[in-house]
Structure formats: structure tokens, C-alpha cells
Image 1 (cartoon, rainbow, N blue to C red):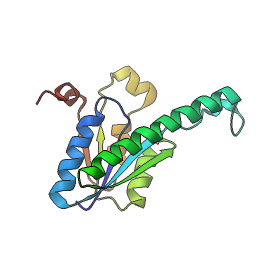
Image 2 (spheres, helix red, strand yellow):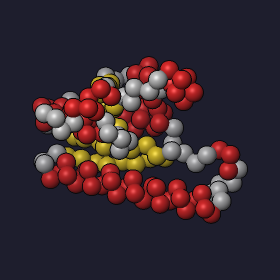
Image 3 (tube, rainbow, N blue to C red):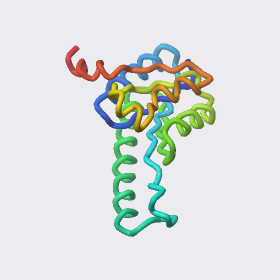
Image 4 (tube, rainbow, N blue to C red):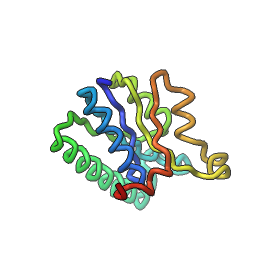
Length: 152
């Protein structure tokens, strides 16, 4: 696999997603595109930038996410991987698929949170959406692997 899109959200499953991303990249001398999809602005704001308090909170959150993503990318680069961090605001499923196409990815790697049926019904499932709409292979890291982080 030459081009790997690894979608992370900084939840506990992220460590396992990165572990598998590194294994696949190392096996094929692949390039890692490390993607974090930030939430789009809520539609109820009605204005392009929203109220100042909301705008400031979102800007601070985006700044923290940029910093986290850059730190992870720097660590991977230090381990010898070719990494490009990408942060995009938008709809998660569509953004992952757009970035996979844009970066000519050979595989998408993402984690599953294992949310219950009610949460899935209300919010939909990113994992399910990516699997059903992707034109390239998708590797899903199950939430049950979160428990094994650091226990190996």
C-alpha cells in the first residue's frame, strides 16, 4: 500500500489506529495521510461565523486539534514515516472519502467506537458510511482493541 489515509479522532482507539497504520506503512513503504475531521459549524447559528462566544470556542478547539495532529505527525516522522497531517472541517464520512480520493489513497484506516443501536440510529455510523461508500479497501479497528492499548 503506497498511500494510506488514517482517520483519527483523538479518542482512545486512536492509538490502535496508529499502530496498524504504522504496520501497513512499514510493510509497503507507504505514505501516511493523517486525517482529523473537525465538526462543521452548527447549522442553527444562522450566521456565517456565529456568535462570538461560539466562534471563540470553536477556534480554540480547532487550535488544540491542530496541535495534537501535528504532535502525532512529528512523532511518526521521527520514527521514519512519510506523514502529512490534514485537518478539515466538514461532514465526517464525506470528508474522509473526499480526502481518500484527493490523496489517491490505496486504503482507509479508521476506528470503530462500538456505540449502541440508539446512538447509531440518531447519529448514524461513520464506519458504516465509509464502508458502504468507499471505492477502496477500508480497515476498521474495532473498539474492543482499545482495552489492549499498552497491555502487550
